[in-house]
Length: 175
View (tube, rainbow, N blue to C red):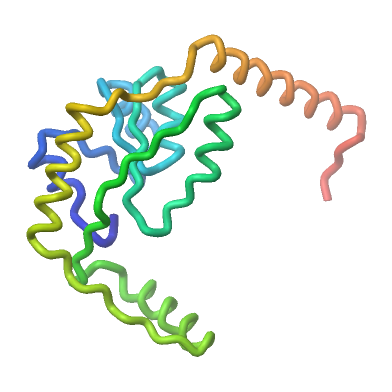
């Protein structure tokens, strides 16, 4: 999000941009109002699934890690499908100066040098837009089965009740 103006790109495509840094109640309200959620954030998919908003898992960042997604989806008996979208990058103002300086010091300590990524070219942006349009038209969004979600919620409530009992009986205590 600090590397590319995704809000403007979404506006251009007629999509509603949900800023994960916004107030949590507003983010939840927005996700609930959507017909479909395109998200690279696993927590977006979790909230969407809980609210019964169908979602499509995107893989944008080269550092994307699918294993946690697969664990979560497996707990609901659901296969995971990821859809790649190019990672867009604009070096001007892409990261706050403090973050840049921390990253450079960490790399310098490890004896490495940070090489700036080249600015995204226009054709890459156009490809990303085409890819997102294609996903919206052609991909069937995911949603867990309601019975499996209810079972997962029940397991969570049972675990919380056990935690309360364990705490009250002294099995757990504050450090």
